[in-house]
Every structure is written in C-alpha cells, then in structure tokens.
Length: 258
Image (cartoon, rainbow, N blue to C red; front, side):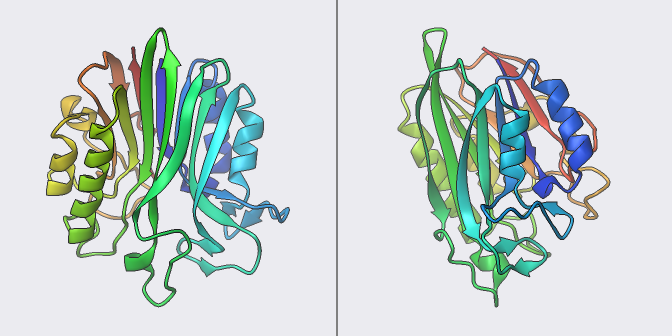
C-alpha cells in the first residue's frame, strides 16, 4: 500500500499540487492532508488560498472516499476571521475498494471554534483524525494530525501543551488492537521530548530514514523539521521518502508498506 501525507498549505500552490496529485493518485491508496479549507458558500479563492479545497480534492480524487473533519470555522491562517461560511481542518482520502471499519476525530487541544482572536497562537484548537480499514486480512488505523503552532522562540520546541498532546496521542494509540500509522505536520523539532513520547511504541520514519528536512524554500524559518510519519512495529515498511518538490511550503511524505 502507499500512503501520502502532506500539509496542503490551503492549496496556495494549487497547480503544482494538482499535478502532483494526478500523478500519485494512480498508485496511492491513502492521502492524509492538513490545512484544508471547505465551504458551502460558493467562494473558490480567498487571500491566495483555495477556499473550497476539500471539494476540489474530492473531484480530482474521484476514485477515493473522502473524510473531512473541521477544526475551526470562519478563520484563515495568517489573515484572520472571515464573514462567510468557511471551515478549516483535516482530510483523509482512501481508495473506494478498501473497506473502512470506522472513522472520526477528537480534540487534543481545546475544542472546535474556541479560537480567541486576541491570542491566536495559544488558542487555535487541534483535533486528531483517525480512520480504520481492513486490507488483506489485517486491520490498520491511520491517524492524521496537525499539531500546535507557536511563534518564535517556541515555534518548534517543547511546551506543556505539546507534551500533553503527545501523551494523549500515545494513550489513544495504545488502546488500538491493530497496526497503526500516525502522520502529519506536528510543528515539532526532531529531538524534542514531545517527539520522543511518540517514539515509545512507534517507529519514527523521519529518523530511521535520516530525512534531512520536511520544509522547502517557501518556509522562511531555520527549523527544517515539522512533519513526521510514525508506524507500529508490525508494519513492514517497503519504502519511505520525502521528495524535494514544491507543491506546498511543506514536503510530502510518501510511505509504502504492507
């Protein structure tokens, strides 16, 4: 199987993103996206972002079943609040011929729509999306996450809320009686305690495959790690790569496994 995780940056690099997805949808089985907008207002673009990226992805990935979970309504990152119907969240797309056993989400940090405009970095809620499926007589759970974002000087370092988020993820994963994949944009530096907590029962493929960066030139900061893929010990990883291509301000993570 092939799974691709990508922070889609709200579709800001739309044409390169679409070209990439057209190419990889031919042999991918699962896509996990972060920073996806969705609206029922008919608005297609707002401040260089695709305001209905989820529907556009659904049309493109028409051989896949999409699952979208909102995190915050009427907010566009970097730009503030809007006055039209809009949500921002996570999306998983899985090939339609793969049996889905369950799906859902739950909040690890605050709750939906609790964003305080006076303190956006410390109040933007964060939820974990999960989807369980069956493949070749085995069961798997994929978890898609976009972690807590903070400005410098704590942009990717440990904080109490980040350590708490990792502990909650760990508690959830330990209860699952099947193989697990955890992926997304965690907004964490490589050697933080928050990452080490997730490594207690999972293999960190960014470390194992000695990936040198998950960001590209569109990210102005010095910290080049943000995105991670973790797998449980029972998953046979055939290949893992983070190609240096420009479809977002993040690099895609491509996992082949069985």
